[in-house]
Image (cartoon, rainbow, N blue to C red; front, side):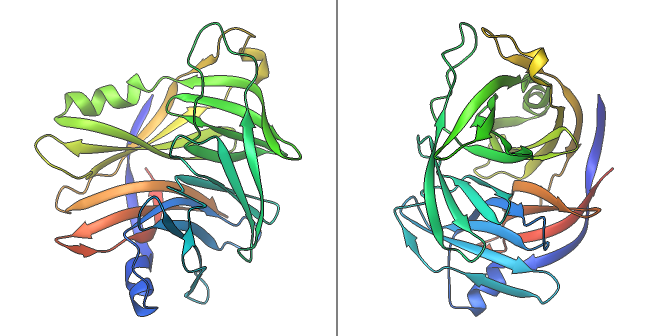
Length: 282
């Protein structure tokens, strides 16, 4: 298993500053992905569980546009995925619903996650908090370490087979190193690899400042049977720690062309400085 670090190349968008110029104040970024056809960055901002908005940023023109307040629809907006002109947003908040919007922010429909018959071993997926486009019409979505490879259908994401991430390989290292809690964040797929972000709160502190981008190899359907999920081991991990910040919590990663990006909730003192960064994994 390879261990490395995240190298931040540049801050391509100071989200909090741009929204401030637009007269909009939302406390944190959540779900994130990049439109693979034009490179525009798409993300969810939330004020709380009731108030959210959708935003997209064009790095070539430096323009950020947003929907304004969307009430009681997106909920926490934990994660999102782009596919064929549409954005699929998981609501979190104990929901199995996925909201679909087109690239101009028009609501299209609500999808539901439909699991296969309950596995004899492993956990039921009782809610959806992360999503990523995998390949063709297939997506990966789930909660915690339990993920389902699904096919996108008319009104549902139908589970094909299940995988279980060996998160102890990620969490164990940090928890032994002086942290007291861990939160799983967004997921992203590229070249048959699954990227998942984990954020850690240092012992005796209140906010996340330490992060790991973990990489797992996605097994195909032949590695999963009908009673147990396929256990997926960690192939690489990359740390991104900012102990000098009040908060530095990576919410998700994505890529466009040869470049990789991450979005993060950032505070310095009482000032919100959420941003999108171009990064490399070394």
